Length: 218
Image 1 (cartoon, one colour):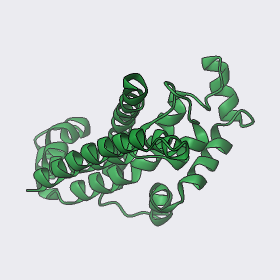
Image 2: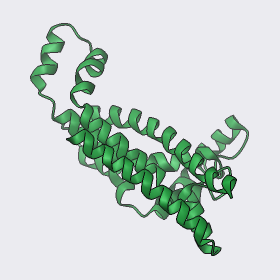
Image 3: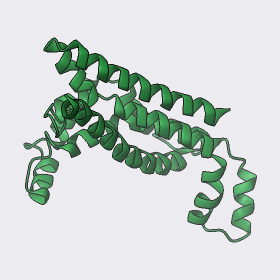
Image 4: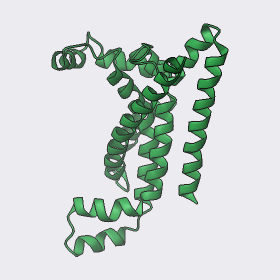
């Protein structure tokens, strides 16, 4: 039981961690790019960014299959590069988790950057700071609380992803079986003891994540 119990937990944390890094990078980039800017089509762009937040996970999974499946040009290119189909791999689970968690990081990062006083950034530009240095030494530190909150929430969302992961990555023990899919299988097979153990682990991890969010906002 020890191996069966710990495998989905380790895999879930690994997938959520890699997804978290990707989400932070993309969230910071697009959050900074969109903060305080007004251009034609901005509402449309932001709607696309936030869609995974409101779409059913099965719809997200379906779209990922269409975009990255073996019959798509992108999927065929990836398969040629990595010499195997992307679907039903750990990277498929990472992509699914990244997509569904991105809106949370984007919203938090954008809100943090929009809360920065423009006079501070303009003063840094006058002193000769380029945009990269300004971003790293001024923008990120001033928006750090919002960034940390977004990162924690995104990690928790990636950790709990079920529908899109199940459709796109499958439920292969030791390879793509995460805690949510393991709970589903344990419940379906009547193994309530194992299901409760995984449920308790998810509650514990999620509780710690939310506690950290409240601490950063304090």
